[in-house]
Length: 385
Image 1 (cartoon, rainbow, N blue to C red):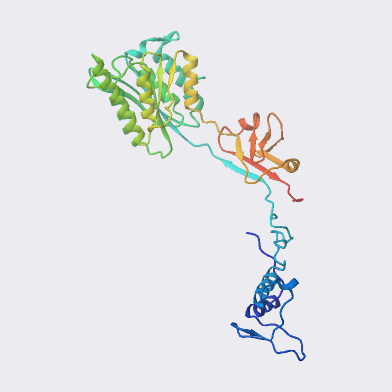
Image 2 (image 1 turned 90 degrees about the vertical axis):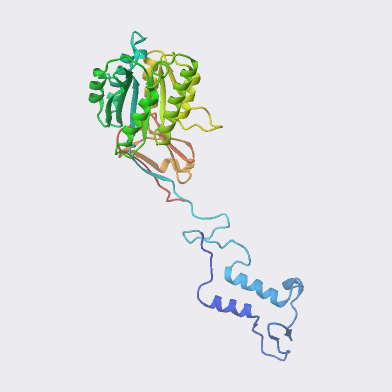
């Protein structure tokens, strides 16, 4: 709010009070005494048409009061800016743009639910599906978990149905630096049996409920075959397949309600896409009228790697909204530092301004804020504003 100008001292207030009460100061002479008791007036000369425009003395005193209080004769020209200078009704303080961002990478949890059934023995880009998933996750150099284990928590539940137990799971609790543990667990797995998706997801929810970490937790389901259940280990007809599908959809829906969304990846194209869409929608909390939740169908190693990379995408945005506009004439007086190092304006590895309200880092400057804690600061010189 901008302060209004007022006359100095208490005299202005005193005069305003006099006008409000209808008291005038007359000259000494023989004219009839002017009186006003608040209801009736007598002996007071009529104002001429130029000064009164047909209004009563009481009306003109109200105008005078307004003029005294604003010092403007009814105009708004004396409205003051924050620095005390006079500016019109459209005036006011100009805010200097700036930015001070302290970025902390959110520590997220991804728990892989990996099918370990007969379907994972099928050839996939020259090797069994199981081996392809193992490489995609924990290859010593290129595995997604191997590369990101210091910036995200990873867990594993590889599962299958077998005659000696259903579901059988090999579990690695979610943790940082989990590549070695997941490598050992997947190396121990005996691939074969059925695919009890619903039973396995129920157990994953129990595992995640027992995890004390309070951040976001996402289930990544990597599956290669149609679902079974422990009660129906080998669906014999369309009715039983519908039942096992419904059980899987219900399980991932329950997981979402518990706070754990599920992302669905089909390794190969042996699974009906109508079911995959239902499964993805349930895992994403889909409501009537919402767009369908994406899922992935991958056919070779590069597609599998790309799907996992997209799911684990932890990139920070490199665009920042400014609290005040940054017009062209202020650009030369602005400096930007990323992690304490100055970066140049309109440089491929510096910063740019797509519009007056946005600062955007690009190239090396954007890359510099993707790992660990980071800072972005912009300071502008606005002395001439």
